[in-house]
Amino acid sequence: MFEIFVKYLTDKIILSNKEIHLIESVCNSKKLVKKQFLLQEGDVFRYNAFVCSGLLKTFSVAENGSQHIINFASENYWAGDRESIINGTVSRFNIDAIEPTELILIEKTDFDEICLEIPQLSQLVSQIIQKSLIVSQSRILANLSFTAEEKYESFLEKYPHIVNRIPQHMIASYIGITPETLARLRRKRVMK
Image (cartoon, rainbow, N blue to C red; front, side, top):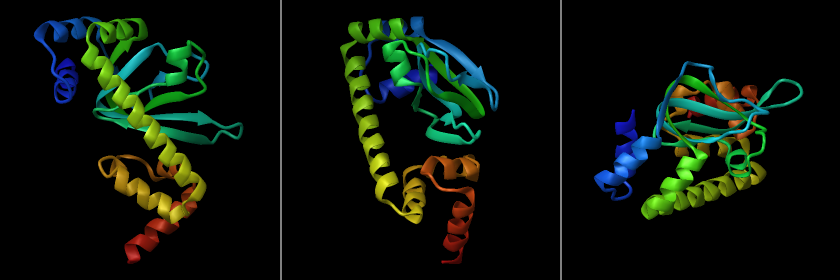
């Protein structure tokens, strides 16, 4: 698994062998089976989690038991609860595996240390956080102003690599529509 993580990093930044060994020394591998939790609401998230293979979803559960999906993380994506890891507070979210998933986990204190020792890693993290903020802002705007059809089309455009790996009711939850509306949109799309 570590080789996948190193390839991801070295595709983005230049690392010496010494730096790669330093990163490896703080990495832990974790495998999740389908529906296994990486994080449960009420726990404090203490890791930076990188997805080597598989697919995760981040979600909250409403009082009526319905899920509100916040995020999906597939290969070469990071997963976690930024608020919980940064502030050391309990999480309001759950993260579980939609399919068997392999992860690299780095404890927050170790991650902070290697970012101090490897400035280009710190810069990469900053770029990732900035990109994540832009994606979040775009998603908020879409949820406030797009029609159901526009939300679905946007999802298909942005996530073609995972759309067939996610159950339809989860896509509906993510884009903020009912499964019935999504079914209608999909039928309409097929008819075109």
